Amino acid sequence: MFKKFKKWSLKKRLVVSIVSIVLLALIIFVIYANFKPEALPTYQLGEATRGDLQTTFDTQGIVSSDQTKALKAAAGVKVLTVNVAVGERVTPGQVLATFDVAGLNPQIAAYKSAADKAKASYDKAAAMNQNAHKRLSEISGESAELQKQIATLQKEIAAHEKAIADYQPTPSLDEAEIKAVLEKLQNEGLTEAEIAEIKVALESNKGNFEAALKDNLATKKLELAKAETQLSSLETQKPIYEAQTDETMTDLYKSVMEQKIKERDAYLALVEELKKGWVAEKDGLVTEINIKAGETFTPNTENNAVDVSKLLSMASGNEDAAAVLSEIFSTTEGKDKGVGVGMVLESYGDFYVDFTVGKYDLQNLKVGQKATVASLGKTYEAEVTYVSATANAQAGFDISSIASSITGGSSASANSAPVKVKILEPDEKIVLGFDVDVQIDTEKLENIVKIPVEAVTTADGENCVFIYNKDKKTVELRTVTLGAGTDTEYEVLDGIELGEQVVLNPKTALEDGNKIDIKA
Image (cartoon, rainbow, N blue to C red; front, side):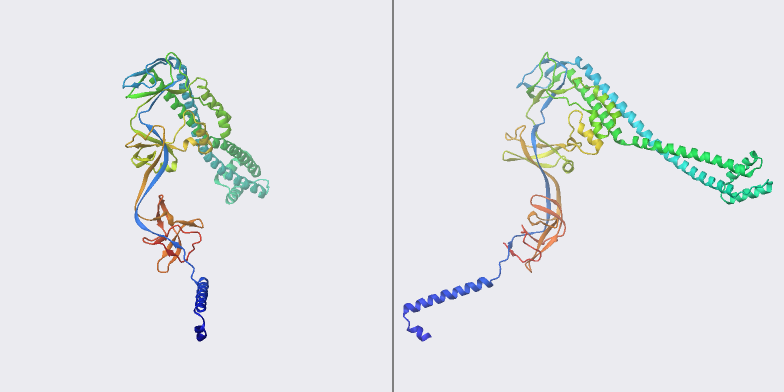
């Protein structure tokens, strides 16, 4: 074959060689394509390390100044003088406006009357509630005593009826025979007191034993009927007093009383301020005026009417309470008791960011915590300077909060609390009234085991990670217990040992025991 190949022309030998090489390469490629090992998925690794973790709280707020002052006036007050104009700068001690408060006397009287009525209603409800608790305790003791008495009488009546049934009539019984019968009855269950009663009955019936037993039996049945009637009466009273021990209405009356006292005190304080006139406390700028000399002030705010009857009907259907509370609210209703902003003073001093938080976030915020504020592409250092101890309350009487106190629900006004963050070094990019981003450093966890956020996945509703075995180049799916977290790391409470490597961004196709390649 080789000799024959040598006899071929150079051109023919070249063609045959090239074709052979191509065929051989094609065969090798087909074999490799069918039998080559499948490429392993490639992942990056993270590691369980020990270190610190700084948790944060992120929100948005509105920029405000600590030197903004809104001066309020009561509807119906007569404005005597207005001594400044919008845009005018004022100095400490400068008189801004004066008022005649004589026209507010009817409103003052109405506020006092409403507070007095609300207190009287609460005192009455509280006393009734206290008395109901006391009476229920007494009824419980009296009922137990009557039940004991009834059981004793029933036992005595049964013994008397048996004695009468067993008695064999005889013409007469001598003293010895009577004594023997009485001893027999005592052995059968009659007490010494009952025996004494029978002896008295024998004397009144001239020794007729059967008549004596029947007379005594009738007396016992009468006592039983009386005791059962008394017990029935107590059981009838019990639900009435139980209803009066319900704290719902007492709490409602208390809420109304506290609100009316608060309204009264606030109104009286406002009247005193108006009586003295408005005086500037510091340097500032007048930015708003809503009063005019010689006119009676009418605020731009609305007075929210309170439909007490509808409220109580929705909550408990207690018509009597609705009537009482309607009277309390009608005391100030129609008295034009509104309050509004009459003048606003503002100056550039310290800048703050105001926002509200829910009850769960509130417990993580504390005065003094470090923060950052971001506005218009710039970040500023800041500090938490105020965290409210109570939830926000709406101005005036809050129907939703009272309704929720009766029904056990919650209202929007009771779900947030105000917080202030002070911007330490503000500049021209911090503008009053603008919204900004706030990040507060809350809890710092020290010397903990932590892993990258990208390592965590879920399986069957549980947090899991894939642990890499570098010797076998395989992964192990393991459940972990996580603690606090940030945008980049999680605290690990259980499931991972320090130094173990974890797979980052595991795909859904990755399974326990799979082999993987590691990306450098």
